[in-house]
Image (cartoon, rainbow over all chains, first blue to last red; front, side, top):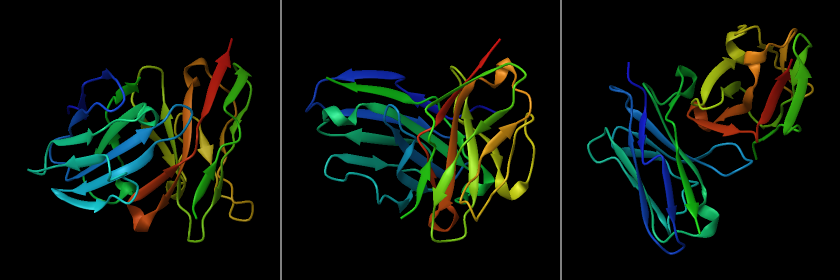
Length: 115
Length: 109
C-alpha cells in the first residue's frame, strides 16, 4: 500500500511570497489532516478534512492560511503572504475514519524556510 | 486547556540500560494517550496507545491518572531505539491529537 505523498519536500521563499503544498492521502482514506511542526515543537493540527468538508480548522491562521480538498482526495495548503514564523515542516496525514484511535498515517512532510 | 509536557529534549543512555521517557499531561476530560516515534529519515508513526495496554518493540507505557503521567519504558535499550519520541493526548471527542515537544532518545554503544 502506497503511503501518504507530499510535495514539494523542501521549499525556500522570501517573506510576503506565497507558497502551496500538496498532499495525496492513502487511497480510500476519507480523513485528511494538515499539521505544522515548528523546530523544537511537536506537530500542531492546522486543519482536518472529512472527505471534502472541514471538521476542524480552529488552529488555522485564516488571515494567511487556506486549505482545500475539492474532490475529497488530494489537498492543498496555501500560505499567502508568508511570514518568517511560518518556517516549519508541514505534515499531511490521513486515516480511514475521523477517529484518531484508528491510526493516522503521516507523509514525509514539506520543510518550508521563509527568509 | 489540554497540555502535554515532555521535560527532556534529549535522553542519552547506553545500550542495555533501562529507558524511561517522561510524559505528563493536563486535561479535564478522560485522557487517552499515545506515543509516536520518528526514526531518522522516516515518517512519524504510532508506537503504542495506552488503551491497548500493549508492548511494542519492548516498550510499554502505563497511564497514571494520579500523577497525570504516561511515561514510556523499556528495560533494555537497543541501538535501533534511537529516535524522536512524541507523547500525544487525544481530545476533541476522538479526532484531535495534542502533541508534546518530543524527546530525542540516543542509545550509545
